Length: 176
Image (cartoon, rainbow, N blue to C red; front, side, top):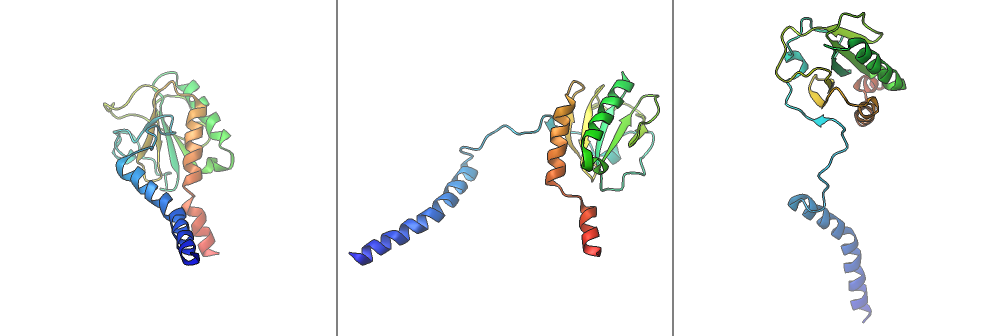
């Protein structure tokens, strides 16, 4: 009787650790119980080429491959768009140096922390007032239409910056 009780305890202990792994495998394999929505406010991984393939008049030498890029189309109502993204950029606080703003279009002077260029020709994926969030390699991660709230973009950008540490800081720790 005692040996049987001990075996049941062992099986119960194995089940406690094995059942969560088995249930997770079943959920992943058959897509059961996995939510379909995502937390991004914009269009995730849109069909837009990387930044180096964009038809821009000037290539930005200031992008060193370590910054996230907030690119926005400024073909109409440019001063208001530039100001709203400048304010959102400032609201990032200590994470702001990891982000570069790229204004495409407009004749106004560049605001602090902003690079300015123009479209050489309008691509088919371009929309007036659109905003693109690009990773440090220049790939478009999120696309927003012109009516997006700054808070939504800031939430997405903050989440991305939090989940992707700055590789330049890791190099500083290695060299010290």
